[in-house]
Amino acid sequence: MEKLQPLFCPRNLAQFPAGRPAKESGMGMASERINCPRSCSCQYLEVNCTGQQLQEFPEAIPLDTRQLILAENNVSYLPAVELSFLTDLVYLDCKKNLLGHDLDFTFIGVAKLVYLDLSFNSLTQVTFSTFSHLLSLVVLKISNNPSLVAIEKDAFANNTWLRHLDVSRTGLTFLDTSTVQDLRNLRFLGLSNNLWHCNCSFLDFVAWMTESNIHFPDADNVTCYTPESLRALKMPAVEAQLHFNCLTQLYKQDYIFLCLAGFCIFFAGTMAAWLAGICAVFYEVHISKGEEEEEEEDTVT
Image (cartoon, rainbow, N blue to C red; front, top):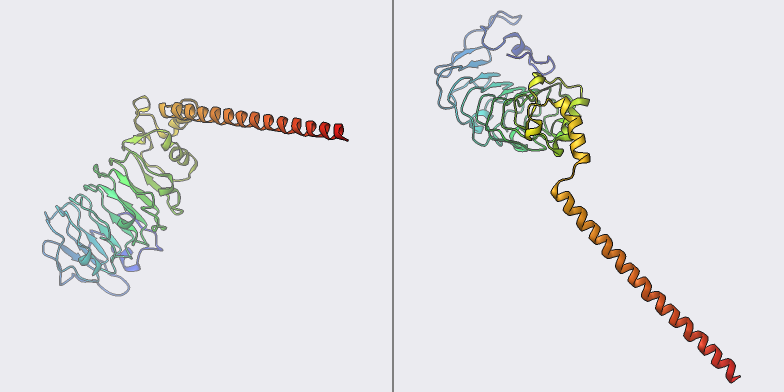
């Protein structure tokens, strides 16, 4: 289990790491849980159902549970109602399951959650509603989800305490810079082995990577997948190439735009010259008539 910051980890939870038997504390000896879900083992404030071939979310989980470990099962759905009963839950490990359905509003009732592991599943997207209620979230692992192809721009807007985010080994091709740039407490960001499409739209993100103080693990495998000319090129090195490509080369749509702009400028200039010519003619005619009238008046007098 990953060590959490003391600020977010409850005192009793920190004393009893996941997967180890409870030991004597200053408050006395912690005993085995009496009401424990079938096929799971229970210690003080912890329910561990690792590798039990579970098809569904376990029933009868004690309401005071703070650590719930469902790793290495066949669970395909997390019921929001049952989770909402676990109001003190701070640690949830669901790695290596079959989660792939829409997770929006799934975690609405577990606002104290600090650690969430959804790696090695079949997630397809992350929207604002997926984790927006997890205001205390510090660690989020959604790596090894090959079907994950989209993370909305504001997906982590409410997760301001997020320090560890791992989206490695997914189907992502693009990540908006503001999605992670606005996470002021972020210190660890996993991006390796994704299908990054290194086009001009990705230039801002690459520039942010080189300027930030965030740790990027397995940085040698944070590389471009497309276009073919940049494949396997590492992110720090691709910035210069993208600058050159995006600032010196024009695409078909750029030529079309320039042609249209040139035509509009030419047409506007022609019209302006024509109108100026007409105004000049009218002005000359008006001046000529004025002079003729003055001459006629002088003749009469």
